[in-house]
Amino acid sequence: MNESNLLKQSGNYVYFPHQIYRDFLSAKYIVKYTAADNVDGIWNSRMFPQAIIRHISELDGQMWSNTAKLVSDDAKGKANDIKYNQIFNLISSYQCEDADYTCLDLTNVRLPKLPNGDISLRNSDISDYSIGCEKDRIPYYNILIFSDDNDWLVGFQNSIMTIWNVETGNRVGEWRLSAQPYSVSFENNFLYLKIKSRQHDEIIAFELNDNVWIVNTENKPDKSSIRFNRVDKSGKAVSRDKELMAGSAPDGLTRICYKGGQIKHILSSRRTVLQSASISSNGSHAVTLDYEIENDQRKIQMWDITHKKKQMERFCPGNTQNVYMLATGDWILGKTDDRFWCWNWSDEDNFYYLEAEPLSNSNMKYSSYENKILYYDGNGLVLFDLDSKVKNVLTSNYSYIPENLSQAAFLPNGKLAMVDEHERKVIFNSIRNDRLMKVNSEKLCKIRGIYAFDKEPFIAVATSNGLVSMYHTGTGQRTRKLETHSNPRIIAWNDQKMAVACVSSYSKVIVFRYFSWDNGRKGNWYEAGPRISIEGEILDVSFNYENEELIIITSLGRIYYLSDLFCDYHAQTQIINSFNIGAYDFSGVICDEHIKEELLMNGCKGNLA
Image (tube, rainbow, N blue to C red):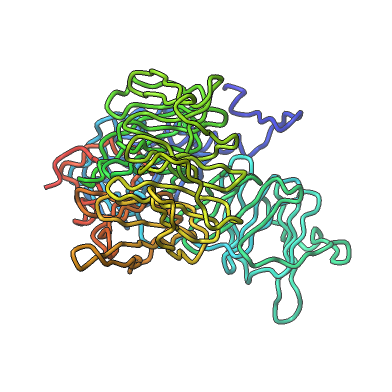
């Protein structure tokens, strides 16, 4: 017997825990003694613990033969409530490319996240839960607590306690208590809970190293020796060293983050969670970035927004934090820890790193003219052609380039409007007489974004006081102030219909539209917002010109399609990334019509008619 099945290392210590040996022997018994006449007794009597499942996979090689085939054949055509444990154990233990998932009731199990394959699901039942799109909300943990050494995070949802390993993000277990604790304490690898009861306060202890309840009287702690702290019911926690934060939101998202905000682990989410998303300025294409890292890579999904369908998937460097679509939709930009990469939409082999960080025109958009971007290098301000990789130094083209240039946008004539971060001014040359102009009536406010309309002589300037101001690019005069009611963080523009969409808070968006009458001599700006609840944090918005729609992508993996001016609801797509949808053939699968629609929009294989 290989000693790796018996020994476990923790820090500088190597020890021989009997639990590992016990789980190994259990797995070996299951694999060796499963036969046609005892499948139900062994595989359906209970759900196997994860430790046993891991050993089964190692012992039997995850191959769909012998044991796996026996268990699968026994469950075919039988209802999930009869064979639930058996199907769960089967799917968890054997995840391989030659799996046979036909004629199974998979409504209460997740489809495995296989790297590739062509696995048939013919005559199998699936549900929202199977594809990671269930409607039920995951519990909201109103109490979260880090252990003093940051090894553990404990959460409480009513009387249910859950413990996670902070380093791995794995859930250790879940326990139901008599009530929710009102005080807690961590001491010497023990978690102590104080719970109110009718007669007296009850103290329960939990050993975090071995996950063993202390229930016998002689091991109960002396109340006077424990320093209890009252719990905070805000759904948030900060580690003692201030390096980690944890939070649970009512929409079902519970996560651990570093102090800078970067996600360390997603502990639970009601649906898909995205790291980043971006939509092209014309709304034709979008790209979404998974939060999960696999084999030092992150998956990006590429969307044809006009036809509401996923086109393809690719894998980018795992340290990619954000993705951005170029205005034309021909290129994807990615930001890693220390540099930027660019990737051609149509040519998967056309991938390379940029020499410098591109200049943006707002918080979520990078300035581009056709397929050219702006950045600074040793020669000054450069216009770089992503297609040809040709540089054009622009420094000599302008009489004045601000020393503190922070943002830039292209005017319709190809000239630049630039933001001087120090002066808090937008600088450009008049389209009438080429006179240098500096605008921003909100002198004390930081400029959040700028945009020049193609068909109208205006440039829009968003400032940190919640205003979007319209300046005439010929005279420099401010002609209109739009109140967004808060600090806009994402701004999108519609050239064809003279409209502006502003995202301020977590999930709030406002659309301002210009309406004129009297043959265009008179007009005014009006505002509208979605009449439906937007689920999750808004990651990007844009206008799709062809379908006349406003597109919204959120952190919970929703793509919303609304009417562009009045925000009436049209449709939505639930992004599926809980498993690799391309590894399955969905021909002949049994499911509700709305699940078929979601699968088709996510680019599934097979005939779902």
